[in-house]
Image (cartoon, rainbow, N blue to C red):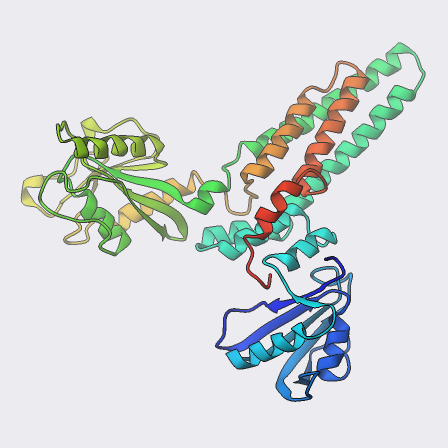
Length: 427
C-alpha cells in the first residue's frame, strides 16, 4: 500500500468553475508526464494540455503544479491539476489517472494520513485539520486552525525537550558515584523541576475543553407551562422549531435546535413545562426537562424569579413583557417579548456572553478528550517524582511515553482509522 500512488478530487463536487485533483506517491510524476508530455518545474504553475494516455484525446487545459517530496504536503512527490470543474472533465481525468500503472483512488483521509506517517504533521495537527473541515461557526474555525497550525505541537515539543533533559540528568546522576550530599542535591532539584512541569500541565488541564465548542453549549429554556418557552425558542432560532399553543403541556419532549449566536455554537433546548401532573406522558416530559436543566451550561428561566433553580449560568426572563398585566420586570430579570421583539437582542447577547465564559479563550489551544487524557497521564507521573533518583527517572520515562501518545509517536494505532475516516476523500 505504501508503494501505491493515490489520487482524488480534492475540491467540491462538480459542477464548479474549477476542480482540483491531486496525486501523491512514487508514480505521481510519471503519471503527469503521461498526461502532459513533460513535468513542469517544481512549485511553478504551468498551463498544460492534458491528454488521455491511451488515445491521445485532449481532456482539458489545466493549471498544473509539481511538489517534490519530502518538501510537500504529504512528504511524497505530489502533482496537482486545476482543471475545469465540469463532471465530464473531472471523470475523464480521474479515469485517465486510474488507468496508469501503480495509480489508485485514495481512501478518505489518506493524503493527511500519509502526511502524518511521513512526519509532516503530528497527531494533534491532524486532529485540528479534521476539526477545521467540520467547523460550522467562527469560534470552531479559530480553535481548529490554532490546533492545525501546530499550536499544541510546539508547546508539547517544548515540554518533551525539558523531559528529555531532565531524564538525561537523572540517568547521569544515577550513574555518578559521589558523596551523599551531591546526590541529595540532584534528587531535590530534579524532583522539584519535574513537579513544576506537572503544575504547568495541570494549568492547561484546567482550561475549558474542546468538546463543548464542537457540540455547542447546552442552552436550556425552562419554566412553568404557558410561560412562552416555545415561542422564545422559535424567536431565537428564527424558525418554527417548536409547536406553540395556549394549551398547557403542549411540549412533551426536549426539542434541540443547533445554532450559533454571534459566532458561538450553542444547542438551544426547549423543554416541557414544570408543574404537578398525573398525565403519564407529560410526567415523562417533565422528568426529561429536569434532567436537561441539570445538564445545562446556560439556563434561561421563564418562571417567577423566586422559583428559579440555583444555577451558575442562570438568565432570568420576564416573558410576554408586551402584555399590560405582566407589569414591570423584577430586578435582575430581562424583559422579553417575542411579539414586539423587545429584549431578544439583549437575550442573545447575554447567552453569548455566558457561553464564552465556558468556552476556550480565543487564542488558547483547547484540548480534546484524547489530548487531555495523555497530558493528565504525564502530569500524574511527574507528581510521583522523588524521593530518590530511580523513582524520578521512572516518572520521567512514563511522562515521555504519555507525550509520545499525545503527538502520535506511539500507542495510537487503534484510533488512527477512526480519525482519518472523518476526512473527505481528497484530503
